[in-house]
Length: 432
Length: 189
Image (cartoon, one colour):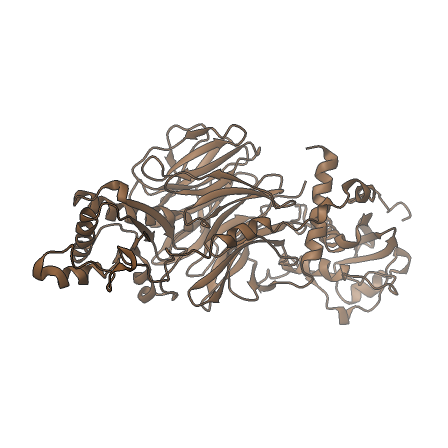
């Protein structure tokens, strides 16, 4: 795909997202923040007078608040409304005890806008960052997320993940005994949800292509599980696997050329790797147990998976070319559905013990396991592309909801759908 | 201070607007429609009562003729049971369910053109794809027993729904034990 085509896809997607839904189908609530979150003042962007579809400063403030690491000053407490550097009096901002100040300006430009922002260190009275960028009329929200990412990176030294998306499955009761399954994609703050595919039969196991343009998933629409891949931009899809028995757990390789998947056509569930161009299959596992839930290491050389070959489900690791598998988890009666962090040093998984299923991370370098969540039925952990947060599904008051936790367990947030159950969230790779 | 503007990031160049034309706005709903299209048929849905073997010719879906003498009503009673239940993370068939499976196995042996689908299900605990594996293992256990009892493997197909189609919606053992099951679903003829 040429760069031009790729940009077109991204641009078209922006259009779709914007056209889809102005409201949030998922609302986010911070359920636990970090003590000592850094106070920042995000001033409404100037100069005013123009009606804008998006309150850019509010989106930025919400992103920073959501990270748990920043505490934006309430709007009513902002004692001035500068939108240009010449209007800033640092003494004002020392009074409200803001460590950092963010100001900016949105001005119409062609069919869209020019958005500029500046980030200041209030105590030293210096600018830390400042950019001007153009935004399509429908992309203002995304531009705001990108500004939040730049601010986050400047202040923490780590890349942000606000301008990203998530995919997830919703299940809604439509009539007695009838449920509608919908695979949806939304911005990572829950805005702009849109359905990718819907069915009255189960949909499950969404997996992003590494370039973020396609999703693989399992659909039971024919009363049998089949794996499809679908291009988000066009909605065009391709049947990948429809063998007898299980066709499940698709996982795109990091280079996008292969897909790990689970088939039981040869007797019981085994891990295979399919070359997507030739559709040739290579079988990786051969055990009497259930081998499933393959996940690739970021370098594409290793696959981790769930197997109950030792009696209970545990995580194993093997070369992506096959060969012997080594067991990785020993704590707990049930460890399953593992996935790698972007740096490959940590894996997240579902950790079951004493009839509770929670999200845990295993540090592959020192072998330390840490349980991050305290639900009863937590599942489907997925790392943010910057590795700082893990999104997962949990059950709350008899509903399936999505939640996110920081990898140190200190920040927690909940994303609830308006109706029905939400489940199986997967964080998209950073857009290219 | 006047050097602060860096035009380093021009995210969506306006040229793209022209270059992309109008194709970007196509709404990708085609696949969704296909998914819904498969829905109307639904004879094998876990939440609806399946048709009996032999279809609508008989007053009762269960064929008295195929079963000998005085055992008829007992066999019919067993044949009317189409769900067997399992323990957590187990595919071991309980002794008390063997008679149910045997009744269906006898019926299938005597009616070689009749086909069944064994649908394996699990409770919601644990991970979804692992539960797909577990549901298949349960369906396979029932299939294996039926084959040992003389049913042709060609009459039996299996599918696992894992935890995706619960029969009961609660989040405790009273719901879970109803969900760890294999449903014997006769195909309409």
